[in-house]
Image 1 (tube, each protein chain N blue to C red):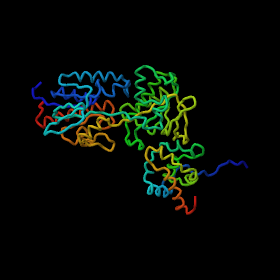
Image 2 (cartoon, each protein chain N blue to C red):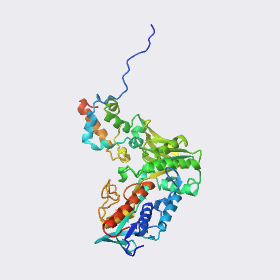
Image 3 (cartoon, helix red, strand yellow):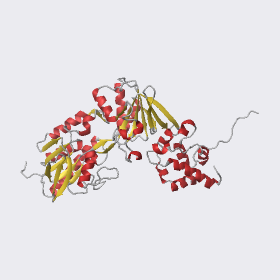
Image 4 (cartoon, chains in turn orange, green):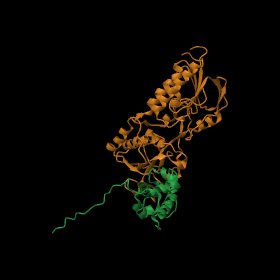
Length: 348
Length: 114
């Protein structure tokens, strides 16, 4: 490794940050990878199986962990990036605990936060037992059992799509893109645990735009008998025997619909992470109407911020699945290598 | 002679080119949020009138947009203007005002109290 190699600070040790750090490190660039949690991996750590092939998320985490072990990567857990200041051609990066790094370029890969479902109060999350989020269901899968708070195996479950997405009332006009396919995947997996469970997905539109998503939807209908009802749920209440009552319109039948279920899964959308939002505000980075970080160009500059030398990767810019996140991170690494080369600080 | 029971049936098609969409246009003009409806049915799910009578606000909106005015006219008085539908709408449509304007438009274009 050359003495005077360039140094890049990467904010965020999820899939995007790690993938980009790995690529930078392999091309001879020194990387400081800063992650707020004690372990790398981000949201992947909380997920059980990934769509569309339902592989174990631990396989992807173990791939990412191998990247981190590169000698050029200095992994700093339990720390955040609070502020980025331009100092001539380089940057001064201030951490949450008051530390400081000098970097030739900075990559922001601060990811997303799940929509806090209690904000959609009418769905009863945090009010009624057995209204859970899609993330909490993944934990149940990992722990190997799905049970209500009362310890009963649920026989009838509802999944509500678009919780915190496409909803003017919570200030999120955008589609989170992944919740439809997550609902389909999770519905199928519930059936693996509870073979006689009846499952109903309440959707506005089925957005199965990714590779193999539509096929998964078809499989959910054909092999797993999952039911799909087109109607946005207006409210959830509770019956006298503590079952959940879901109200929607069955728009295709043209009549109001009422249904009792034992458990309700809210397909929480994605929002820019709190850390990313604060970092953007402190560092003068632009955000879009959807509050995600706004790239320099939608078509050919999605990895670039409007500040030369600060780059973006992954879900800090928009909702994205793991595959797209990793591709986006590679794009970011390529942009950074290019930038360092053009400014005379890297010849790898 | 046996009667065969044949008669002329009215076509069930929505004749989009012939239908009168002035009512819908009037609402678009005075309540532009009407264009944002994606027919999710949240309004109809929460609607008290819709839970007890043959009324779906979602269907009402679609019929308006297609110019199926006779069907709309028959449903005009179902709404009680409680406004719960506005709270449920994920697109921010001022649903209550849509019905209010529809009543107004029928008065203007039909020339009578509907």
